[in-house]
Image 1: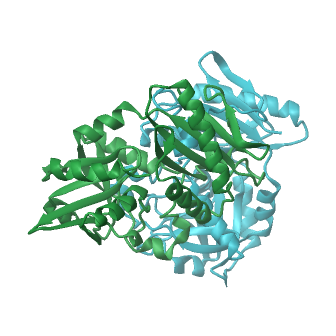
Image 2: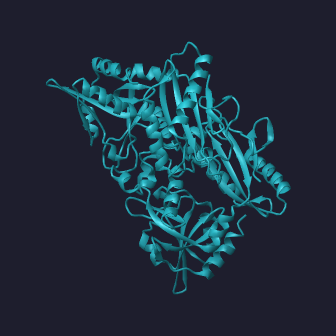
Image 3: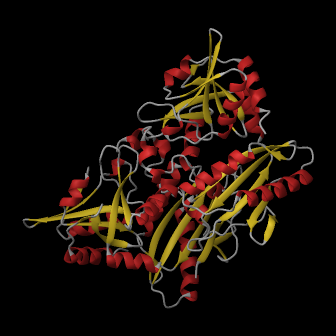
Length: 292
Length: 292
């Protein structure tokens, strides 16, 4: 089942509501303009992972949209309320998706609508993690420097306006692929529609993890960031783009990493098979599963 | 007041609901992903203007998003229900905003959520039409050819993912301006966040109306299109871009045209005053007000 908790000044720990009943006004700018922000995090045994990183990114997205949202404490309390209700309803599930959403609220009201949703991890997500991904490169239309000169494009913010991300995934599926890596108009590798790109080189005893540079207008990946910290402690070298498609084709392994699907191996790019490494995937997944 | 009518197979003329009560599930992909489409049209004395053009564009947006939405007849009946209820509630208002919204519905349900909203025309909209607009050029980040090679960017579709459009208007207001004209990364004039760009040259007895070329990835303007038909009958010559900023600076008048605000004169661009023409504005507004 899905659990919903609205953040509400009259309810310190959030207001638990029935997710099967309508809870949003049709005039909410989240629904009519995609004007809002979100985060998705994994909870294991009732505890959210990387909670502070997600709350920090939510605050950063809110700032980019000039949106006043509840503070981290209010979110944390609502998350606990949601996870408690979820554990009661689904005692056998160890994992849950915790989604935080804040919209600009009803036009003119000047008050964000904010809620926490707790739901099971979709089976399709787990299946993709196990099976790996066929991926298409698709152009994102932007050049890799636009984010720095055009803040109104909200490039580093995780907004509710995800229609293009969803359309890109539909386009990939219609071509028989599973997911997408966006490229910039100047030929740089950017990110997946809902994930961060990660690649590994394992050469002459040197092991390097690479990800595209943040300045190219991509979302700061909370999982990539935590994995880099953990991998560095294990002796990995780290690198931040700029990356071009050939870097992925030459790598010893490529993954898409995100908070729910975690580390999913990329099997092919535009139909061209990639090198994969079960050993590297297992080693890095071991680090990812220790995130707190 | 705001009137809401949900399209519902069990209700031929739509299902009238209370707009002050929650009507949407928090799990609707319209609210969580901006995954849906909309149209806004003006109704005068209970009759929507350019209804067929809006329904045609809605169908075109739905196709771009691979979204199955109710047919034109169902929308028309719901619009009539909404306008009837609005006329009863607000007998003194001659004008109303009729908004059509269709989302992808709840994840996995495979059933669009669709509704019609009827509300008064905001006073601020009328004030802008009268006063004219200070406008900023802002980069949209895309080049003017991307729409033709990257359908997943949904460039010609009117989606619910309007966070960037809203952010651009906020950015303009923070700079003391009223509205925005987007430019492409290759220097072409595109469109406003919620309007079409229109300019007039009146030279040596030749009167020409110009608008940016549709192929540059802009939304097909229903008002611009209807105005072009009407103006041609009045002897105007017509032109379709490509346009660059200097064309606007050299024009005899520039407007942003849209279905609710209608023809709003642009007074300045990036702080540089433009030529305006009360006579041309009056003449073209006369044509716009005769749209059916």
